[in-house]
Image (tube, rainbow, N blue to C red; front, top):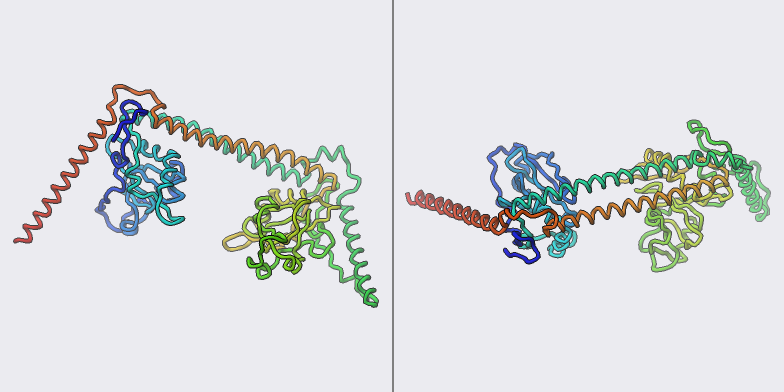
Length: 525
């Protein structure tokens, strides 16, 4: 125990084990093995001293030997990484039984009389304490723990008992105000998400550009443009087939035109009516006419990790799509491997679609994207840019309508999987190209505003966390509430704790000695 010149009058610095018993001796409940006791696994303790769930019950026989025992009023302190760094600390409330049990990754701290459990809990919650604890952890990577000896020897400030209570009350008052502000910010963030979803919904339904359409009537409806493109596509295919027959010196056989495979058409029977000038189309219809315009990534056996080299042709995967960053990643293949996977090659303007886990996420490759191929977790679509703008199709994939469809039809055991059949059956509402440009422009503007607002909310939330730590810092420097000169100094509190501990230890020694004597007499008889 030591007084520090920068502490308030009446405060002392002392080892933690002078104010709490760390991992105290277990008691033996006089109960049946089938009796139920509170059980607290690690997930039941919230981060940042946010509370504890004691609703889980297990039989005494199940928990008595293999788990940590605690009592009402004890402090549970997560000792393992990353739970400790995340502030998994809790005060055990009143229990239905004499004690409870929980994860072996808790240290149990039992405050001595005159020391408030919340005083110790808030002290441990300070970011400086947790950082120091992290530096003193022992064990292997991923299994690092705060050792008991270090925790016992860590010095903390101790205020007089009445002042502890006043400070705790003030901390909780300030934290309550902060929590209300944080809750409001979280609600605002959720409202931003809902507003963004409503904007995307309005964009693909034509409501976002309703007024614009009145002022800018289309010269060519999307339906007419689509028909023309599909007609031209068939003519190009026929010309290519005739050229092949001519090169071989053969005449085309009877019925050769019937071999043309028309792109699939959408089932519009249950689809809503579209704005004037719009048309329903499938992804096959809006892709360009070249082979492999719509293509899933290669089979896993065709592209293994041992195919990767330090530089060359880029391998695009989900990491680029999920991050919306085509420049991220450092997986490459050789020119020879790229040639063998040329059906999976991508070019600027292609839209990449995620198939596994985080399904339906998209990335439009920019003009300066490097040549490469997709991996097995992606589909690439080379779109006909006379008919559609890639960024408009990306908006469609982001819309709530498409997300709901993907959620409904995705399949898989532990992760969601999207297949090519589902993608081909999806109906896209396509406006005229000029209206697509307007939709993209408007949504870009709105989303930019929403992102800025979301960034501000995140900054405020970060500031709230910093303010919480500033409150704790002031609290344990004695700057949060006025002092009362009539309070008993903490030094006297600690002397009393020491005397009580000495008295308890003396009684325990006497009892132990008496048991030995009785045992000895019984043996002599």
